[in-house]
Length: 254
Image 1 (cartoon, one colour):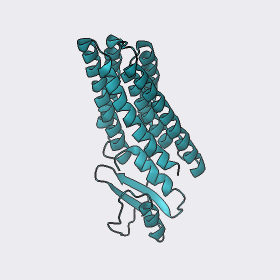
Image 2 (cartoon, helix red, strand yellow):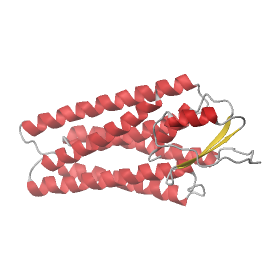
Image 3 (cartoon, helix red, strand yellow):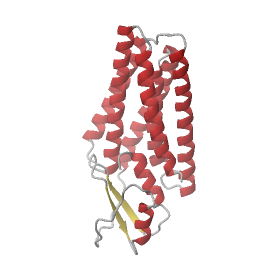
Image 4 (tube, helix red, strand yellow):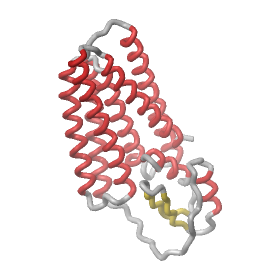
């Protein structure tokens, strides 16, 4: 699994199998341990149907029965979600005002992260139908926003070259970089950092840091070249990234 949305995809696929007691994800090593009672055939079939390259490695008995989720994990992930959503509001607002597609695109990436964390945290305990409905709405909404962004990029590329406010691009991206840096530091300092959800969150936050740096570099190039092209390029790259994430989210709703 290379992102939290793939983990959610597997969780929802297996959600209706009553014999499953717990799922333990090891994202970096692409391994899943399924604690269950009864036959494994239905579980294995469901995983293979996702076409993620899954195969059964081994089966063995265990006496483990305690799978209690740690409240501090949810609290920390909830804080990361709140920061991501807050910066979605900040970046999309300043991006529109400053005419920066880089900031607008980065705001949608923040929103995409919020969707994934939201599906994980707020749909826990809900019905499978409810989870799928949330995922479908999130995925289509994300695609719609990204497509609107693409249209605007094309309009600006072929229209008059209006320079975005590079100082706003850089200053807001630096703030977002600091916020993501704090989130990444908090996740890495967590006692549960080796667990699947925490590792997945660190991967997402690390990607956010890379995008923030990209927007900062684009802002510097806008000022240096007196051209909006660097802003449009970084905006396009991030919009593609956002749509790819949206399609992964939509897989959850199937």
